[in-house]
Length: 300
Ligand code: CP
Ligand code: NVA
Image (cartoon, rainbow, N blue to C red; front, side, top):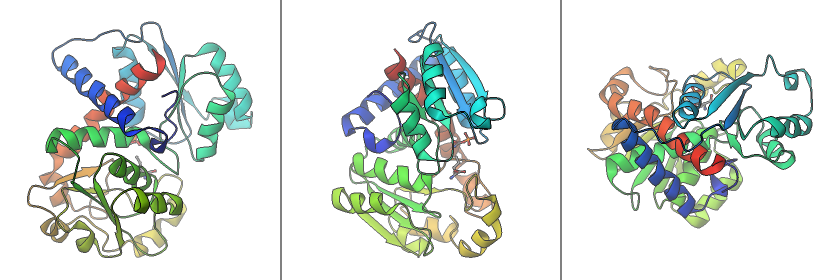
């Protein structure tokens, strides 16, 4: 494992190895133990989009590992004024030990890795969100004990979350179902891969997708960068909501996951959100532990 550009690049064993280290780091932290795996290491964090969880968990994670994190906003970097990614990658590689980047195009992340000489971590693109799904898998294993045979259901937009969850589910032996409106399906190449490698089911009926699910997952109807489509999407996604009806179709002990931020009354009702708040905020906490494991593996 040299980079974390997308989850599809990792083998099942690499994913499990990250999750095992994440569990260990979480346990150590709960007991006040902070091993300086990354003493003196420096991580650059480039943000071309907003963030609460990713920014804070990476920054705190580097601090707890004995390293240092620099917040690099698009508004301040020359990249925001058109300096090519290939030059930025080569310059930052001379100063830093790793880069985490949140941006729009997946190609920008891949190009940083291609032209730079340090590990690159994808902190979300329009295409995928691998750090989030590692935290989600960690949470699912905490609640369910193992992955094999579980059913993970996603309700909503076939977006970056759906793409990464599909890969994470198939790689860990879970069934994956998605309910989305026509025209908002996940990536076609990933869907073809998931059908071939695992158990994949797609429908436009949320309750059908949620039938006997162990995990019910949802995300916003309009992602960052899609603010201009908000009204069109509100019409298209009406009814694609994790509500009492969806939860009644899922298993009785199903957990709910949401990458956050959440829009109550849109993709999830306030009732379902609050009834499953413990799982959702455990999931948010696990961003810290899962990313510390990724950082320790890539930057050490
Ligand atoms: N889930 C997630 O990535 O949250 P932020 O956008 O706050 O980083
Ligand atoms: N799909 C959302 C996820 C946010 C963590 C977005 O890209 O805005």
